[in-house]
Amino acid sequence: MEKVPMTLRGYEALQEELKTLKSVTRPAIIQAIAEAREHGDLSENAEYHAAREQQSLTEGRIMELEDKTSRAEVIDPAKFAGDENIKFGATVTVADCDTDEEKIYQIVGELESDISKGLISLSSPLARALIGKTEGDAFELSAPGGTKDYEVVSVEYK
Image (cartoon, rainbow, N blue to C red; front, side, top):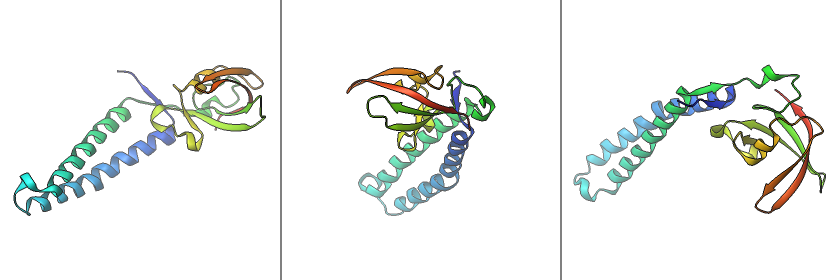
């Protein structure tokens, strides 16, 4: 089985979601199904069918989370402190060479990525372009809008 890299923060978030699904969401759905059954004819009972569909989605998500957490390879970015090369867990400040606009990203696992929070997936084009670079390195990134030039301003491991 292939390991799934993630930070400790990402692993704990998945564990919390799994716990909530099992201890709160699942019992609530079971209760909703039981109540819908009391209304009689199940073939025309919209509440029953909606609850069953929700149950199916929830059970699928539980199975997915159990699989990912069982294969998780939790990596602490702090253990790379002082390393100059960019790798998993690095918090990187990059500057657009055309506009001098700076953005900060952390390279994380796929399940914990969220671009709005500056968390980019290890498999994203930007992360793949950054891996192995050091502070001061320039690189080119091909995107649907064209090719852009960037420079690595800083690299941190927190």
